Image (tube, rainbow, N blue to C red; front, top):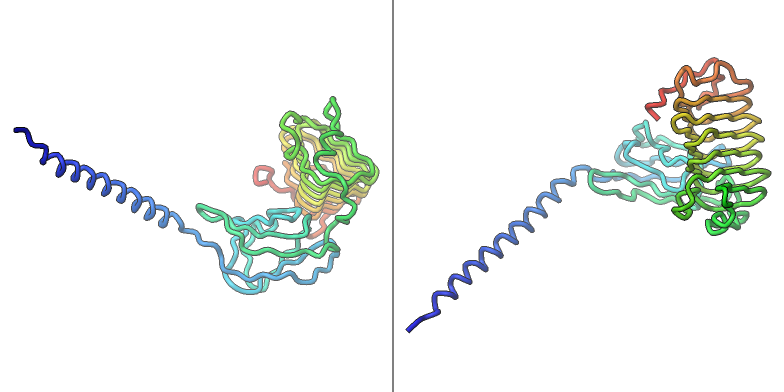
Length: 294
């Protein structure tokens, strides 16, 4: 007579081995994920304090750990990298231009991002009146013509051009005139022309020219990708940096709060009524920074 009693112990052993393997895998994953967390978020207290400039917000480090600025980004500010290049300690203050009613300080750890703190912004500190912004990205999309031109004159829209537009809209030529306001970044493969207008964000182009004139304001960084020319004049203002790589740079009657990143060949030998950097230096005094560091 044939017996089947020996099969049960064999199955039991196999199941036990399988369970042990699964548990070992779970344990290993837990241990490795725990050891990867080598860069905990800083424990800090920051506050919003009074600023001398009505369009800026001052963030003060009150107490806690030193903040390595290069590991942070400030969401809702014209310059999200406002803390970069510094070690922020208790007692120090950084002034930023808000673009939203709330600022969020994000810390980038080894394996994840943390929100360190959020700050409410008084609407009076914004470089524009939120009540004036009555257009959104849907309106912008309908106003990008078949030839890829976005023409705005006296209009105010909240949209990142081209990131928030349809994927088919790529080489947008941005032409903002006569009091136009765009709250958002301009990042396009088309030309950019600002004349008597305002961009509360960055201006980036990979085309031939970025032209900023007629007392226009950019509350962010102006970046020309390789070979793109930048021409800023007419009592215009740039809150952030100006970066040019292999294209020409012309500056006349302009105030730049940030730094200029350009080679010696691209940096203009003279620029009338122009100040650059936190020390408000003239072109003849100013030493441009290496564009590869931008």
